[in-house]
Image 1 (cartoon, one colour):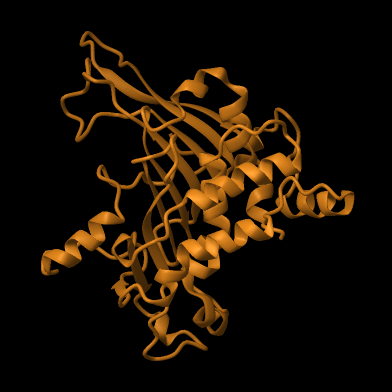
Image 2 (cartoon, one colour; image 1 turned 90 degrees about the vertical axis):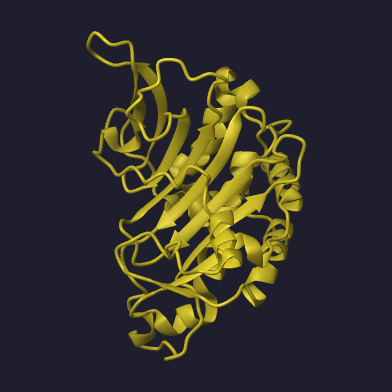
Length: 312
């Protein structure tokens, strides 16, 4: 099965970066990684696809395929070799280990005005936003939450993966004015402006010995290495050559459906959210069980705001 997400440069770097850099080998596990956040945000609505979207919703549209495949690349074990067969086998092991989602770990939302779109039912309960917490029940990832969110009519259009590392046992030199300590994290940005960055702490300028966060960054469109290949062009070329390295195997797709099926069938009513924000809010008037429902699908320190091209 062709999934253009698997042909994007930063998606491929999920493999290369972690496996070609020895410094990350011992840190890529539950002892050093606090959480993984996968975001696919769009600042536009369903446009003229209302009828189509009524049949799928956000979970079927992007979570079951694109974003769970990205999760598999983050969590997979190093393969014996880089053949298509071995890579597919390791991704398959991850998909088998992903715990079946439960309604309590999923929040569904619908942007205000969606029901007025052409082709949309006036009482539609289809989600245009979803946030969820997934677990990979393996030795390497036991207890590490994988957070996924995707939605339309959000603040920005951006797709990225953030791997957040644990903080040191004692936070020396932390900025006392910061709301929370700066944790090291890797960010793989798929759009806009494909790239990868590592956030680290260094001494800030001045007399005080206080740390500040800085990004060590590489941009794929910097022009230093020439133009990179379009994801669809790469995959079509691979298909013509018979190279299945970047293709999703049928068994992996079936496992992805096993993961999401319970929440596709019934994950509670959708919550309306205002366009231009970040989905449903945690309102004070919600009953305690509903508050917990929302918190489950939210990282403890909050979501990282996507880093857009050109931002510092």
